[in-house]
Image (cartoon, rainbow, N blue to C red; front, side, top):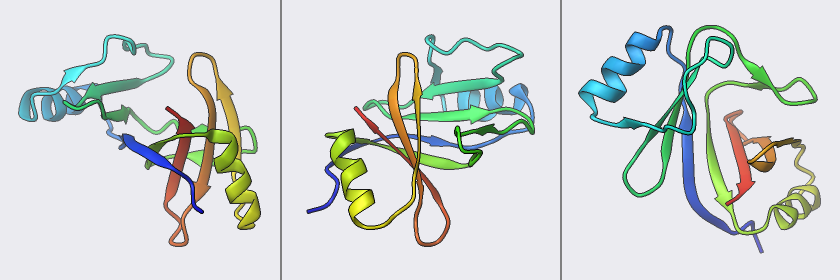
Length: 125
């Protein structure tokens, strides 16, 4: 039995400037910024709410966050799963390597590459 995915949570796409994000995602697509992720020069990230609960995350500039093992967190999509511990057991049973990190207020995140090298984030949602 596979991992029980509940929903698409977010897609993460990089832009070069905050103005690009505001213009395209705000003005053109008409999305609203998530007030729980206010802009800061340190974090350089905007979250855009999509009706139905999903989001688009737009990191700005060249800085790329990393998992604790050093895996770059660049372009990716995130899936909410029913049970993150069961997801870990499934990945381990399949021999699939993953990185794990815990963020305050977000819980455990697992980062894994699909067979084509695309980065996928899993978290309990």
